[in-house]
Structures are given as C-alpha cells and as structure tokens.
Image (cartoon, rainbow, N blue to C red):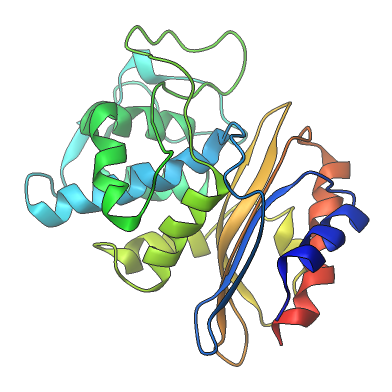
Length: 259
C-alpha cells in the first residue's frame, strides 16, 4: 500500500514532477492514492477509452452490432505511428475498429467511430461510471496540419481521474463487453512507458496517449498472484524516449508497494 504523499514523492524522484496520477487497488483491502487526478491535461489518445465504452454500450443496446461494417472515408484519414489497415474505401467491422483504436492506437479507426457514435453521445454514455469532466469535441490528428473537422467544438477532455474510473469499470466488468475491451487493451502494441518498469509475470492491459506536449499511460495491472490495480499517469512532458524512461522508472519504484 502507498499513500498519496509517497506517490507524489516517487513521481518527483522519477523525473515526473507535477504528474497527475490515480492508483487504486481493486481487491481486498481496497485502497486509493492519487496526485492531482483532476488536473485538466490534454488526454491525447487516452480519449479512446470513453469512445470504446460508448461503442460497447451501443452494441449491447442492439442498435449497433460488432460485425456491422462501416466505410472508411477520406475525410477521416490522418497519420498514425504505425501503418494503418484503415485505408480509404475499406469497410471495417466495428470489432476491427475497436481493436485497431485500442491495441494500435489507430487514429483513423477512432475518427470513423466518432462518426458512427456521434461525438455528443460519448460522454453521456460514460456518465453512469462517475465521469465528470469528459468530452469528445474533435477528431484526432496524427500530425500537423490538423484534420479538417467542421463539427469540432474545442479540445477533448479526459482527466486521469475519469480514465481511472473507466478502467475500474472495465476491470470489474461493469461495462458491456468489458472482456472485449480488456483483450484489446491487453494486446497493446505500444509498451514503452509504464510497462517497462513492471516485473515478469505482471499483466498490464493499458492505453497510452502522447503528443509533443503530453505523455500518458494508464491501465489495469494484474500481478501473478491475482491482485489487480488501476494505475493512470498523465504528464505535461513531451513524448520522447527520455520521458518513456521516466515512466518506467516510476513504475519500477511503485511496484514494491503493490506486493
């Protein structure tokens, strides 16, 4: 167990001063520690978590189906950190779009899903899980210039506290199709941040978010003995190998407190 002031000190010693952190033990004894979890940092690709939950909710309601196919249009194309299978003219299933969005952080898949769901529906779909400051206001751009998005109404919002609430709901199967979302997070392609500081046998089903101004990571950590935790770390640091190494150092420093 670790208390909030110790968590803050570990972050500072790891080179992450001013980080926004949420940590929760999901088993017994249950406990929480946090550092400025409501800080309004731009979420970058962490915003894909509420989009996934909204999609799962709609599929559970029956008006959408996981095998429904959606056309990838030119208006939703943007850069990705890895080659995207979501090319213009491809008809992707909602299952494919979910997995690409979470496992590969695919921006094109994300933009297609924003159109499918309607950005105004996403935060309300997540409100039952306690989210208070979440909003999807614009599509994602992988590089400058930003994607042309006439319906944009501002910047996206998802503080670390809200991301942690969603991850908790997924871990506890309170979200429809939680297992489907969890499997996509567990298949994460980008594992250069917190994952590098964990131990062999630890399982971290997670999502990252990064730009030239922010770097984030958060997910569901399962230890070999079965204990589970939610850990979310947001920083106002540029995404680069040096920042990634600081995330790894922080995870390594926190890990002994979880045994």
